[in-house]
Image 1: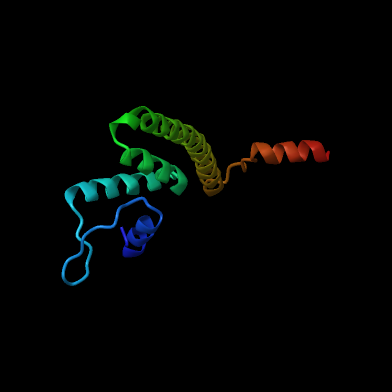
Image 2: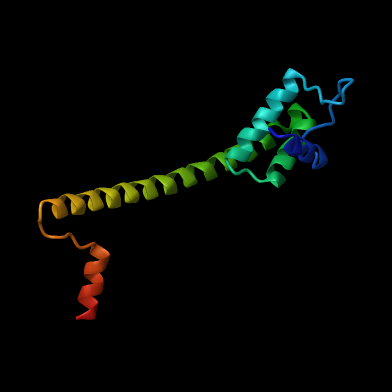
Length: 128
């Protein structure tokens, strides 16, 4: 994590100010590092700063907020699952298109007929 990110996370309340060494460098504990790793992972999954702030505020309140924190994470996990499903569909479409282009290239090399894309066929049919 960059120094800029750490300063920003401090400024928006995601992390508490930490002690400093004599040279002015921040000194993070193992618990701080674990929390920073969690924050980094949540940002990597596109959790908003606002959601992270909500989670951090609940975390500060202790175990009494376990249910709310779990719910927040479950909602985020559901959003990730939806995004994964969308990406898998897009991946399958790309794999199909790539295979189609390889087939076109193979036919072109051996002088066979050119393959027309289904959407191009639909355009030809409506133009006639």
